[in-house]
Amino acid sequence: MKRDLARELFRSYRSSTRKKNHVIEEERIKRDEPERFNVILSELVLRREWQTGLAEGNLFTQWPQIIGDEIAEHCEPITILDGKLTIRAQTTAWATQLRLLSGEILKRVQQSAPGATIEELHVIGPSAPTWKRGLRTIRGSRGPRDTYG
Image (cartoon, rainbow, N blue to C red):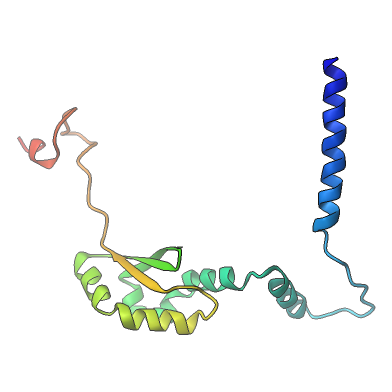
């Protein structure tokens, strides 16, 4: 009884995946002459609607060109989530400067990556050191005030 049920489930699974694959498959166009790779790639990006993802990826790879070399030495883009670009600064002083320049930075980012959907900037400072692990920690302690004796 169990073997028959397993075979039936397997057959139904196989038949349903064939139907799904048939729907997902795109129409193939017969081409007699070879085409340029960039033309085929551009068509693929348009057909699959990858413009936004590529624009956001280019933002991360071309950060120094977009923002400027001097500023890029002291900050880096971390994430893009719901139209919000998060930038991590090297120091708190740079984080403050970037917050003051956030309007100009946002304009540069939107001009250089037109397909990206960035509407807001969020600047964070460097991550603070933790005293939870290490040589002079005490289990159940309340933080740095307990580690210095």
